[in-house]
Length: 413
Ligand code: CTP
Image 1 (cartoon, rainbow, N blue to C red):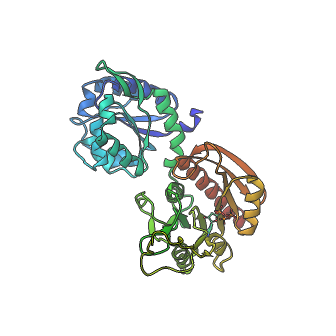
Image 2 (cartoon, rainbow, N blue to C red):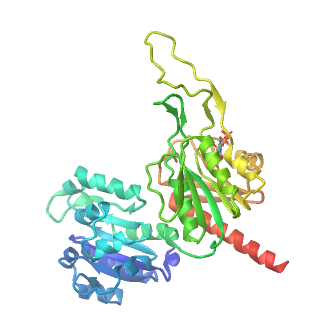
Image 3 (cartoon, protein in one colour):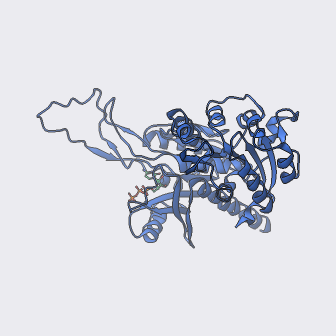
């Protein structure tokens, strides 16, 4: 399983906390899995483990506030993954607020990828609303939080706040590492991604919408950009920040999403890839009321007449400037394979990522995990449950392979 980590470079940040001793075991496990490990020891971290023991395990000098003189930007950019273990309440607050007060936080602020963060602190500090708000901020920016766990603490109290075991942190690195793989396979390719919900206004204050978080679409945009693609992301309102370095167009309605997508196809440059991950509202009110519809207590509630929205995926699939590879999603409540295969034909797209919704334990909207099947005209592949970032990474690898194979075939003709 750890095969995937061979040759990967990990930047490990050890901040202050008694759990720092467990990070020595984490270094050992990462090295055993074939990684190179660069380690930054914060001033606080140095109180718990020595630079000498860290350097000996990493087989290269530990970076400390006093010894490091080189370019801090280089440190986080060259790593395949950044792990902060243990992450104290203080470093979590610093990252959430964008502070660059020492080598570790400066390297993190200059990073081009999210980090894996393993918090360790007293349980009251963990439950403090300030820490919880900081954690929520970091998650919304795409960072992965591992743990903490419940148990006895060094201070003699008991509760949630112990750092996860090194084996569990290693597993988290494994399941997240594909997100951080960078290549240039899709350099020169243009990709158009739809993401998030659409909101269809009823009057100046009300709308019809859905709970799509945009996590999957945004992750796909990021993963394709990591393979060198020139990505345009068209997104409905979501709580996520715009992905770094990606042209992001904000829309509200299905019609606006369609217009933005058509504009992207109607430029001189060819769009090669389209991925429709948005949860487009199927209907919108036939009439947008100029004023707020009044309740008028006791009167019959108003009925809302709806019209069907344009199908963006189908429009892209049948457009005169159709992207070479058009991919859709299918959320089905039953007969997954058959319904998704029918949808593939009906929407004239090339691939569909299908998932079951509406079952116990299958929420999907807003969740970090999903279980999808890749369905094409010739195959159905079960991708098993994995994180949305891992799905995005796998999809972008499939797309990259598709274009590589095509380039080889074209060259042979
Ligand atoms: N889609 C779209 N425009 C729409 C509706 C859906 O682009 N107006 C895209 C979605 O982004 C997704 C795919 O079509 O990639 C399938 O969406 P889904 O909601 O599963 O299908 P529907 O078209 O709504 O069909 P049904 O309700 O019959 O399942």
